Figure 1 (tube, rainbow, N blue to C red):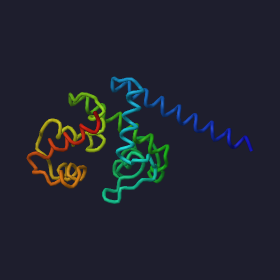
Figure 2: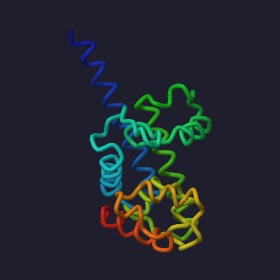
Figure 3: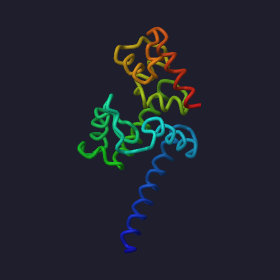
Figure 4: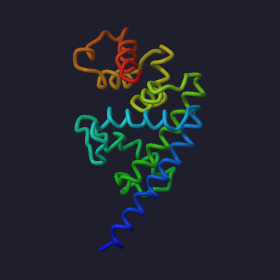
Length: 178
């Protein structure tokens, strides 16, 4: 009776310790302490899947899981991480993919001269690092980026004129990640 419980506790401890080690490394790369970084991750989870459910599905976009990862993004990352694509929805694999996305987004933010904050980390996650760079540098919106921005705003704001759309998106999401 006690052996299965102990085994489960050991697995939970090891996976938590491994995740903490990964976040510690990413936090250091981002130039912030681990506690602050873990708060940012928790906030992203709360915004993306509300309850943190690894089985959450966005029927509109197809995003899946705790971090609302798009299937095409998962396909890219499973290949680079050596994870079989048909297993990407497993919680441990979602965690690994999300950690790799965070690391890549932070690197992209740095290389584009964008300050690393809770908002910029989330913005790069939501819009992709390229789309987020376009928004932050006030570059011309492609139709795809415009569609992404509109789909990530409340209905009333999503009808904003194209010329003001990036600024409206930025103001809306920046307030949520102060």
